[in-house]
Length: 202
Image (cartoon, rainbow, N blue to C red; front, side, top):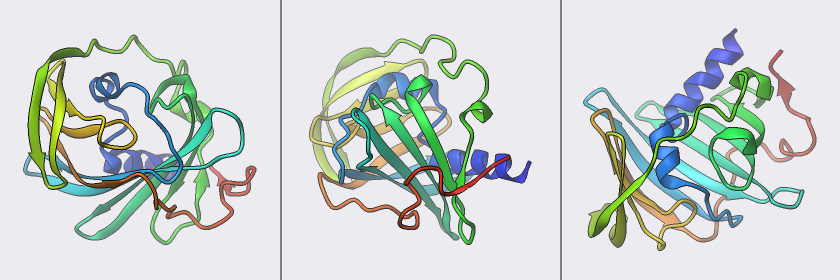
């Protein structure tokens, strides 16, 4: 039970997983190992976290590790690492999941813990509503603007991975702080992406 709760907490801390509207707007990523992007995620006036998303190499054609490491004002909250096929942050393209909490050993989360039918319901429709020049902490970007349900999303080809520059809804906001096409590193201990070597949640 603790491990399941820990995994859920790490996922929520990331703020970039589990939101069908955001997943619909972002679509599939261009996963180049070493690429990274860092975001400030705010949930109303309640909390904020910095989230770094990093693409890392993996054995196997068409697969890539994507790591989301979240840090709050109190320090490292946790990290989630997904082995993806096809670049989508949800659905059956997830091949493996690992969770790392501060001071703990990395834990492999069995995919059945994600619930039956990981494909889930059909995603909401993302509608392009125009283009705009948007300025965030990382700089100014020429972006396309998408509307998905109650969320507005700004995307730019100049940002690695999903192209996410900014997202805003009534519940939270996401803003790009920095990004790079190379130099991304893992926060997981070395060797934990080999085989099934990390501890597994039973």
